[in-house]
Length: 142
Image 1 (tube, one colour):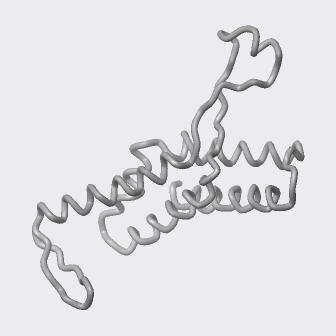
Image 2 (tube, helix red, strand yellow):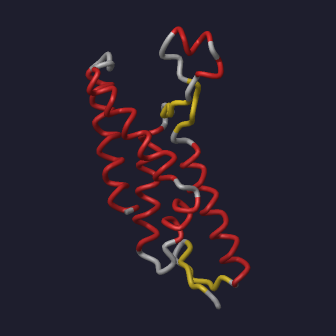
């Protein structure tokens, strides 16, 4: 199978091996955006949890780049939808990005808005944008 692509106005054919390499490269880019969303950290809510390490629970903390990474993932999905492979949706599913990242991010910022923990208008607006981006990705992924 050969795949045609345009590069600076010239058209050339990709071999199966080159196509596979391009798909692998794109997969690494997508998964890099996923890994930039945030991570689990030990919760430090109460003095009891701080004293008893076994009682500590984990909580998801979005990264500073979370919103831009969500936007990148949305863009990758939209670009991929023009093709037939639906590679990005498959990769996101394999990594459980919806369950492991997008839903926890949505919950994190929703709780912040409800408890009014945000300090500035900028943080409030950023939380709203992040929640909306999570909802948009939920539509793609469900």
